[in-house]
Image (cartoon, rainbow, N blue to C red; front, side):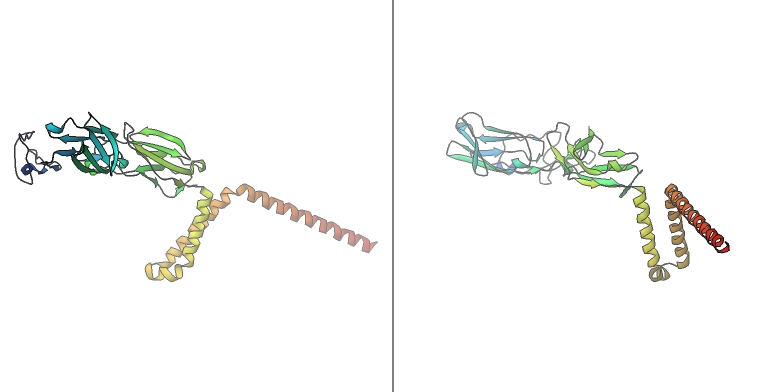
Length: 306
């Protein structure tokens, strides 16, 4: 208690509690592990409201209006933030069920109209609101896309098991499981959309959903055009930056030009059918015009000689 040793063994029993026994208690194992501190308050009041020392979302929460035996039979009234929430002639326990953040507040209980006790209840967040994280970013058509549902457990409940589910445009794409990741082996354009994820405890007593996150799967052609733009910008700035930041500025310029050539070749390969049709069409038109011109010259020559 308060860093003083007060007993040994797994259980500490206080036979007749007094205010002097109030303080912070914790225990230590033979291996040196130390527990969290639990606060004990011993009061001389006729009525006290007993509440759990620590409450997390999803815990079962009950408050007890404890009093001296001589006034036990009186009516018990419970208040929250100054408003009556329960009145009973027999029951001295207020059962709030599964705790959530709305249960936090200042509680008070009264026995008849003469004695009362109060206590404040704090509900600790069990885990944070999840967030969507995407890898890689940006996503290009054909990439292995991995979406992670990221959340953090309360330090005092790190062993709590959580379940995760994923949604695209409001439709479930992966049901609740212990995995916080959703993977797409080869992302396609139709995999674009608004993604959300949901986290819950196995019993479903605590459930939270992330904000919507739009994920755009870029097509390969868009990526090629973006690459050309970036390379053009890099070359435009080469004269100003590479001479001072790179020991071989001309090598960098050559590499950039080769990159543009390779990208251009890739575009030509992708559109080779259209290019061939265009060239053939122009060739036919040129041949046709040449043939018509030849006929006109022959007719003119024939008329002049006859």
